[in-house]
Length: 248
Image (cartoon, rainbow, N blue to C red; front, side, top):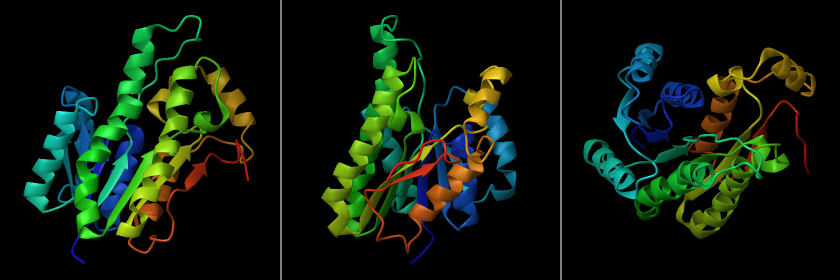
């Protein structure tokens, strides 16, 4: 098979960048898809991925807009012929206790974290089914498994991510398309580093391995699930959390 074509939404974020780099190192042509208005972050992303510039490109997308996702899939298809791999990484937080949460905080998060998953996956799934090959990995969170204070919206959405993965996995398994979830724990991302150091220390103390994870830990899991020879794993949730939450 020729070089795999991968799209990573939220591709210029901390997790997204690491995933793009890992996919490029395994030989894929990678399209990092993200909002176009973040010029400083886009420049930083290009610097971080400069060693793989031939294999990683940026394309604008708004995952909350179905037409934007369809247009991205069309552009990538015209340029590369197909999309083999989709990593749905785009996500936001809008934290507040439920009693203080506004309708806007709920709706904004759901539009990105769940609607975005639907829009982007719907834009690529038909082509994957027709070609008889596809790898989809959706990024959830340990907080979708455990719940978290002040995150009813986020925890609900991230639990929904894996429900989506399981249902779609059943729909397309016989067509050569796998759909899996990766649920990161607390990692060294911009979001987590914004938490006060004392709180981060308390979180790390609750992690059996004794430290926060890195974006590379998550990227390795994604790379494993999208490999050509990972076709017998579908509908699975792979937790990468240092033992912070364990379940059977």
